Length: 308
Image (cartoon, rainbow, N blue to C red; front, side, top):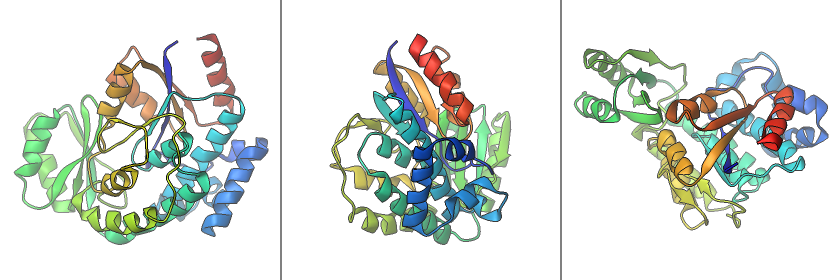
C-alpha cells in the first residue's frame, strides 16, 4: 500500500445526529465534545445530536463540524492509525491541522468558533453559491469575469464540478450565462453566505488577529493547503494561508492530484458524509477512498487498511 491521507469535510456535510454514536460508545470522543463545549460555552452534543436551527447557521455549524471531526480523529489515533499527510476542504482544513499537529485541538475549537461568527457577520444577509457541472474552470472563470457584480470561483471540487460564489444577482446571472455555454446543470447551494468570495475579506482580517495569538506547533506530517494545493511542512506562513483561505478559491481537485503525485493512494475521510470520498473517486478512479462517519465505519476502515 502507498501513503495514507486523512481528509476532513467542510460546511454543508452536517446533519442532526452526527457524531452521536462515537459520543455514546467512546469515552475519548466524549472527552473531545466536553472540551469543545467548555472552551466555546456551547452545548455541542445538543447542537450536533438533535434537530435544531443552529446546526445550519455558520457560527454554529463550523464548530460543530470540527468537534465531530476531532472526536473521530481522537478515536482513530487511539487505534494506532496515522496518516502520511492531511488535508481538508474549507473548514476541514482546521481538522487537517489538528491531525498533523500544527494546531492543538483546544486552540482550533476557539479559533473556529470565532471564524464562524466572523463569516456570519461579514455577510449576515445576501450572497449565494451554486455548483456548476460540466464546464472547465477556464470557461467558468471567463464568464464570472464578464458578469456585472461580484461573482467568482469558490471551489474546484473535482473534474466537471466547480462552485461559484458572490452577490446573489451576479451568481444568478452567471449561472444563466454558464447554461448557455453548455453547463449540464447549475445547482444553487443551501448556504448562509457567499463563502470563498472577496465579500469575506474582512472576516479573514478579523481572523488573522486571533491567529496571531495562538501557537503553531511542529508538524508530525505535512498538510495540503486549500489556497495553494501544495504541501505545508512548517508554520512559517500558516496564518496567512488561513486568513486568505476564507476569501479565496478552494483548490480541492488540485490538492487530491498533488497528494496522488506524491504517492498517496488511500484517502480516509473523517467526519460527516461522503462528499470528499466522492470527489476523490471522480478525480482519479485508481485511488482508494474510505470514510468514517458512523461508528460502524471505524471497524470497516481498519479492516481495509489492515488487509491492504
